[in-house]
Image: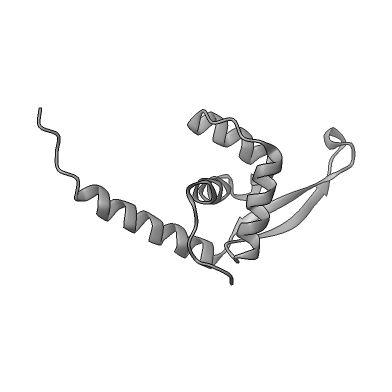
Length: 107
């Protein structure tokens, strides 16, 4: 496994892939990010990050079945690994700990 630290975009894509479960492939991830965050994402950028997350050992992929709607092309489905889950858990813990340290607003 390469580096264990992930950036904001990597975290967002990793979280989205985990949430989509068996439907986590490039186009579905782009659509889910847009629906959830309102961010427009380039499919090429998504594929680059997916490959990087797979190289780090946080995702694994497999080819799904061919479909007529895709002109017979197969989808590459991404699945969260144990290392990916551990990374997300660590990120959540760090963010939560920092958030709890923020003083309540003076209203």
